[in-house]
Length: 545
Image 1: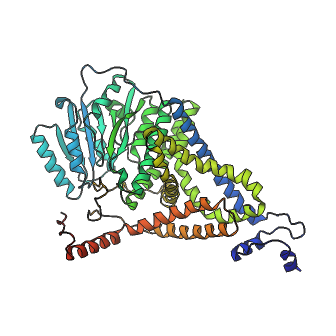
Image 2: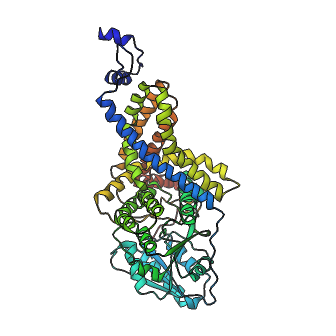
């Protein structure tokens, strides 16, 4: 009898869908869908996650609005110094053998009076970088450049510890910081210094640009992601009077502002954001000038990119746990407290994305049986708020920076969204560790001085961490979404298929590239090179020291 009744109702031919249908069935007498406890256990977290992601999506709209409203407000120094102040340039370095020569050469060519300039190479290296740095500093110092070499035997406090140690030995009233993968242009100090004629200014931040943006699809996506941060986030926050953060490099501090805020602390992985909030809570004014630019090198391999993103994600949550109670107990206006909360907790989206990924297929099946109308007026608006805001966010940044070619860059947006989804496992793990108080070391992002498409990184050796289990999980998630997309197509639920494909592409790209860009990639590269040498196609490459 049950089989006869069920046969009167249309059931998809897919066997798994048939099983699910039996679990979440319509009432056989009325034909009306009747949710049960299992349905609710899927739908409640599904809508809860979508609602939270939508709130952060609305926040992205707000930042975009702040930027667009104030985009014509350009910061200007109050006046120019009649007598320039003394500036210390700090170059924190750790095992950066491939880029340190480029960095030091750029530093000694900065356009600033030598008698008012001090350059500190803060080297924590444990490999041959220390000998290269020492040799370069001796060479430039003997040529009359005001450069010093400071080496620590331990990495206490990592980058924050190195900056703090250098600050103790510095003589500058103003402190500029440039990481090893940056190439500060000659006029950058002169562009920043005059903002400090305002005694309330504590920090000036410049905008990052990209030496190797065109190297690969990955570097194009990275550049668009960071463009969005600098144009819309920094632009929106700074122009509307909200707190924003020093980015750790390509910026200049007033020495007294650092000291007044309590100095560099190393209890988080993003010491720059930590100090930024402490300084702004003390009343120091921050300036972001997008016309002050500093070229930098983007990570060219997947595991380095994931390491960088995980460090930033974990660090911001750590700063949030540390700083937000202070922010909310301060006398700052509500809009600043709210913005600080959204800023420092935004990465909570990554563990939520993992949960959303896991429940999406059963939720899609349940919602499918409830009818298209409910999906259109409930699910679709939430999807728009939680996902489409991302594309709008980055479109605005590309149009602002590249008015003549921004449309070409839009072709990377689907890949960018997929990459953001694919980061969920790596960054989600980092966020959960931060929430649980699990400590980890500061893992710097290796750079290879890869500036052009023809250059490779495979022969350049760094000591790498094991990639662990994360790529396997990413590939399992990719397999899961392959089935989800196939199921969606089989039941003619075509509206969700492109959305599911973003998850499939994102997870499969992350997992596959993480496995390929390992020592196996270098081994394959060496085999190919050996064959080409033996066949006379190329000459033997010089050995790497």
